[in-house]
Image (cartoon, rainbow, N blue to C red; front, side):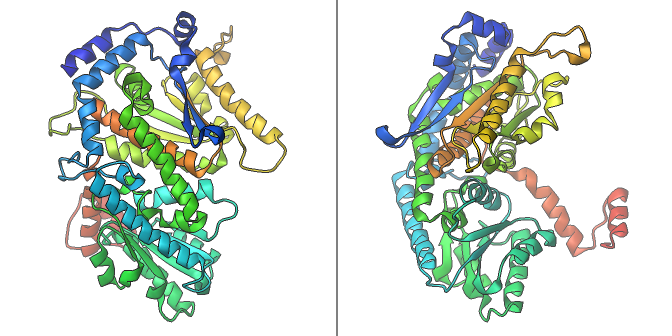
Length: 506
């Protein structure tokens, strides 16, 4: 049935953006939707504007038919019910339960874990572990990208603890954190689902040595472990009272809301972390209870599928017109490409079309002077997401923010309209799509909703393609070969052998 719908989609006419707007004077009412958060008289909102995409009534109707054919409603119900939605690993995916939306037992367990985490965070802030000015958070992948993004976005001013997130095994990253911290007032957070990740554990050992060399008599007494394998953390040396567990059903790139968010709570304080959870929960409820075009993440997935499968777009660009969201493209790279960068469906059969596009991007006006030449005049069609906030994150003259937002909105208008010229080098073809996500302000609650929106968008895309977004076996082969290199005794291809010899590793 889905093949028939795809055939229908491929046969539909593809009018230009100018034609779409001309034919639908009420287009903004349908494709630009405000998402309200908070109390009615003190709400924060996010505008999700997909009007500058090529979605029209005919394509939306066909995509809604596709969602029905792919049992979107059933898959979504299974997700929130805590059923197995990761068939290759036989697991549920219960990140929404961390926000209070999901299977009752899982929500209760998450609440217990949050209560434990809140108690530790508040005790540290009260001085129970002595003076703590710095926290070095050690993790990799989802254990680092989410916390790094959230801390950078929300704790640039007034942080209760100075947080440094270290993920790279390159010692330069750890040394940079050491240089900014005093061992006497520094804590370590070691984040690993299995507590066996070689990059994380190697960095953790080096951080313990640094504490020891800095005069800390009991380095393990300065460690908090964030893990789904508490027994492994205890074996390594962390006291049980400083282990913050989370459920095995919470995947790494979806784990910000669990104890992996400990450094965020340390920087912001627990009330703000609770607001982060609340914003995400509001998006969870919307995603769970809305259908078809009214469902914001599903609407975004319709556009994603349009450009990937119907227009052959191999990449999708994300540009944050807000310095506080500079790490968002990096975060979305892992979320989207590790989730949906697959070549087989959930049942193991080959996919029948392209899956995740390559996610890339940058920051505001910096990117304009680097890559927008290709976006406006290049031969690649690249759908673009612009993300900005109405309230600035600084106290400088408002000219800064006015110019920033003017540039953001101008780029979307220019991509759509284009410009004719007698000089081909100065001509802009136009008819190039973009979407805009405009936050009233960057706050814990809007940030939580923004990240949850992208999580659900990723899931919705997976359902429409029939793939499993919750495993990531593609990352394992390279790690296995790296272990073989470390252990020695394995012969590789001539190129790799030459590189090992050149670097003195062989």
